[in-house]
Length: 167
Image (cartoon, rainbow, N blue to C red; front, side):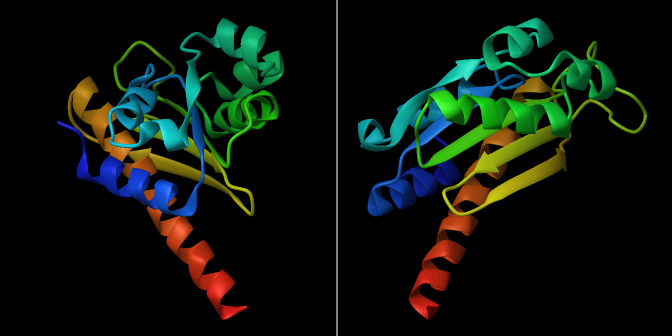
C-alpha cells in the first residue's frame, strides 16, 4: 500500500508541474520506488540513484574522501554533498538525498544510534537539511523516513506558494 503522505506529495508536485529525483543510501531505492507507484508518476519522477557503500558515494557522486573519513558515510555533511553533486547531473525541480542508519553495523555511536537519518533537500529557491531519529525495525525506519521526506516537501511547497501569493 502506498503511503498517504507520498500520494499527497505526488499530487502537490503534479499540481505545480514540478519534478523530483532521489539519491539514496539507507533507503536503498525505496523512496524512488514509492514515488514510482503513484498515479501520474511519469509526470513528476525523474529517477534515482542508490549509493549504499561509501566507495560508491565517492566514485559516482564525487563525495570527497575527507568527508567520508571525517564525518562517516551516514552524516549530514555527506548527505548534502550527495545532493549537491547529484543535482548537477540529474536536472529536477527537487532533489532529495538520504543517508542514515536503519540497522546496526554502520557508523552508529551513542550520539548517532540506529534510527538516525539524514535528509537533504534542494528546491529551486531553498535548501533544507534534516536530521531525524526514528524507532522500529529497518523497514519501519525506512518507511518513516519516506513519510518525513514527503511531509517536508509538502510543507515547503505550501510555504513557497504562500510566499509567491504574498508578493
